[in-house]
Amino acid sequence: MDERTRRKFCRPGLFGILALLASCDPPSVAVRDAWVRATGPDQTSTAMYLTIENSGGADRLTSVALPQGGEATLHFGTNAGGIARMRPMSEGLEIASGSEIQLRPGGDHVMIMGLAAPLREGDAVPAVLHFEKAGDRQIAARVEAADADSRSAGR
Image (cartoon, rainbow, N blue to C red; front, side, top):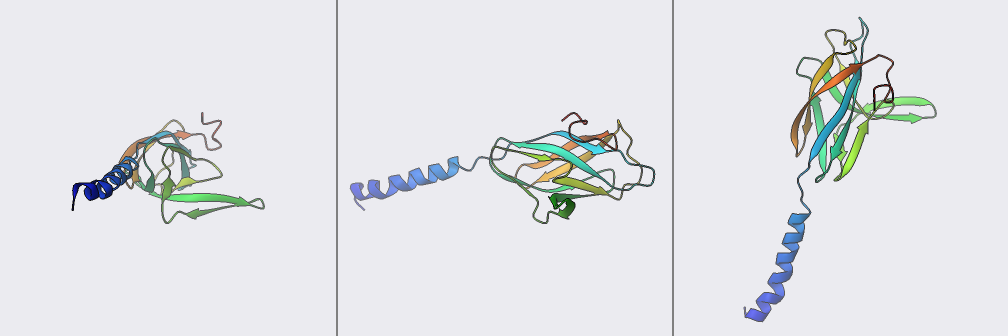
């Protein structure tokens, strides 16, 4: 291949590769404002709410683990015709590049089941959030009053 032909075909290819690499920013995920509602003596479930900020490339929250016991499942919430429903997220939660996702009462949340003991206001619930690309993030969710909502929990 002569020099002129090589330049004609190689430069666009090199620029395409560089453009592709530039668009592959790694995710930069931060979790804040995590909280759960307190539970009563016979209550074994509650929900966790939080905010996820992603200032990098796209990612996905795949699961949540509770090191001190219990089961955590990602759920999405809907409200149609005054009827609230929740369903498990089988594919996890997509977190777009440069986005902020809020898990809050009445919407998407982490369902916590199988609690061995009541959660008391003022305590903390440790959790590990598993992200597809960013890896694990350890958090401690504050336990708020049983009737708390996003506003009363300081969000």
